[in-house]
Length: 70
Image (cartoon, rainbow, N blue to C red; front, side, top):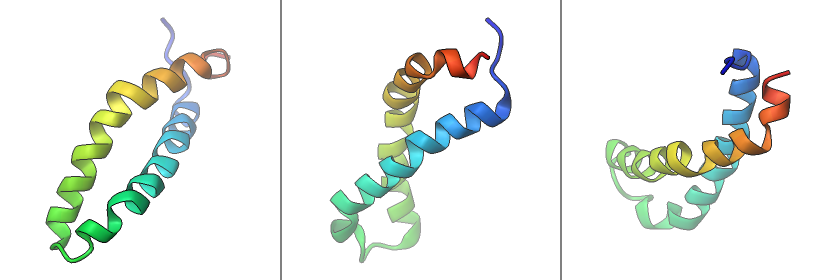
């Protein structure tokens, strides 16, 4: 299968990650606000990375497949 242009893939990733980071920060931000920055980052990436790789990007890839491959 042909790879989409990098700029289109970047747009798709941004469309997934921006609202997800915003939502996760809204949901757990108060609980982790007093933790050291490296621990906050560890928690956020521990939630966001699997969510992006196994859920959001595959869904967006299907939804945006026609546009990505034009």
